[in-house]
Length: 470
Image (cartoon, one colour):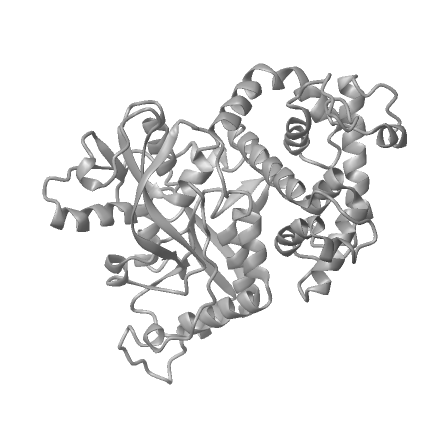
C-alpha cells in the first residue's frame, strides 16, 4: 500500500456558510465576537501523536499546531481540552464546554446532519485490515470472520450504510478499546479484521508489520474541524479564511510534510528486522546513544545509526565509510575519532558531526525542519545539500521548506540541473530515502517508549481513542 495524502486548497462555497439556515440577532454578539471577548479558544481533542500529545512537557501534534495558529489569528489564548473517548469528545461539544473539535474528525454524511465542519485539511480512506498470511478478502462479501471497529467512529458509520446493501454483513462495535489496539488484536490473531483509516494503518505497520490492507471502501473522505450546528456562521467563516491563508503561505504543506512526509511506503522485511534488532541489539548500545546525544533525542541518533549500519560496529561500505555511524576518514579526524570501529567513539563522533551540520545550516530554515536538512547533509554532504537549496530557489520554490527541497533532491541525478550546481552530480534519490527511513525508525522508537501520550493522565482512564480519521 502506498499512502497518498491529498492537499487541496479550501474553497469558499456558499453551502458552507448557509447550512445552518438560521438567522441571529445582529444586536447580540456573534460567536466569534464572544470568543474574542473571552480571550480563549477552547478546543476539544484526543491524545494521539497526530492530534495532540505532550513530549517533555511540550504540547505537540498536527491539530494542536493548527489550532494554536488559529487562536493566534483570532488574538486569543488556546486551551486544548483532551478527552479519552469519542463519546466524551462529542459531549464536550454538545454541552458547550468547547468551541470546536480538532482531533482528526472525518466529515461524514451522518455527522454533517448533527454538526458543522470546516474545510478538509487532509483526506483518509477507510481500509479493511487483515493479518498477513490469512486469506485476503477482495470485497465486503468475502468477510467471513469477526470484524471489530471502534464504536462511534466513521468506520462504524460506513458499516451501517454498507449493511443496507449487504444484510448478511456482521461486525462488532467496540467501546472498550481504541483503533490502534484493534490493529494489535488483528496482528495477534484475536480478531480477523478491523476497519481503520489508511493513515493509521500506514503508521501502525511500523509496529505490527504482519497486518495488511485488504481493500478500501468508498472515496477519500475529508478530515476537518467540527463545530456545533447551532453556531452562527462567524467561526466557520474565520476558519475558512484561516485555512486559505495556511494553504497560500505554505504552512499547511509544511505541516503535512512534518506529520505525513515519512509515511509513504512500507517494507515488511525491513520493519521486522528493525523490530527484532530493537529487542536484541539496541539494549547494548542504548546507553551510548543516551550519553552522546547532546541536544538531540537519543532515539533519533539511534535511528541514524540503524540506517547507517544496522547497529553493527564493524559495518563498512564500498566507499570506505565505517562503523556504527559510518564515518569517513576525514569526518572521523574532524571530530576526533581515532578508531571508527569503536562503538562509543563512532557514536560520539557521529553525534558531534550531525550537531555541527545543524549549526552550519542557514538560519532561515525553521527549527523543526533543520534536522531533516542536516540528515540530508550527513548523507550527501553539506555542499550538495546547499546546491539543492539553490536549485529549489531557482525553480521559484521555497529553499527553507523540507518538503520542496526533498522533492528536488533527484535533480542532482540530471545533467541539465547538476551542471548548474557548484558540487555537481550526487545520488539525491538515495538521500531522500535515507532521511525518510530515519524518520520511520525514529517514530517506531518513540512508539516503543510510549512518549506520545501523557501517561499519567491516560492511566486514569480505561480506554483512549487513537485513530487517524475517526
